[in-house]
Image (cartoon, rainbow, N blue to C red; front, side, top):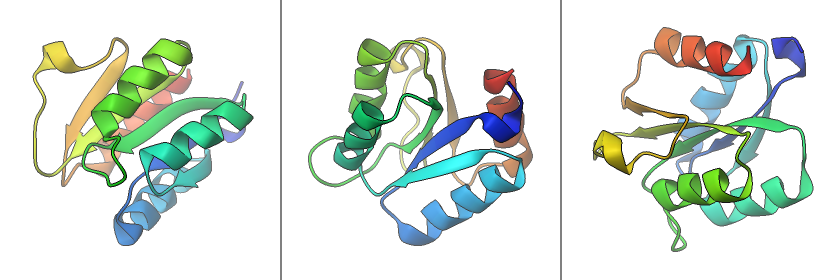
Length: 121
């Protein structure tokens, strides 16, 4: 499967940051689906079977943050890779779900794209 066929779900409540993440991932050759919060992300994951990677912010409204979303994804959709970002907190590595990567904001786009490409390989 080439990167052009790989689907990444971007979960970010801040519209400008979500747009920037979508642009970065699409420019790297991936298909992107957007969610503005974790609740919407779960609804999308329940309907789509083609999502390979979830790229989520930690701080989000409506009750479920990115860490809870990541734990839920790991539990319900084990094959999906997870990238977690935050500009406010750095979670201890022990708190990260298996097969996930954390990037502190502002992240380096090259590092994030390299991680996505590794996960998609």
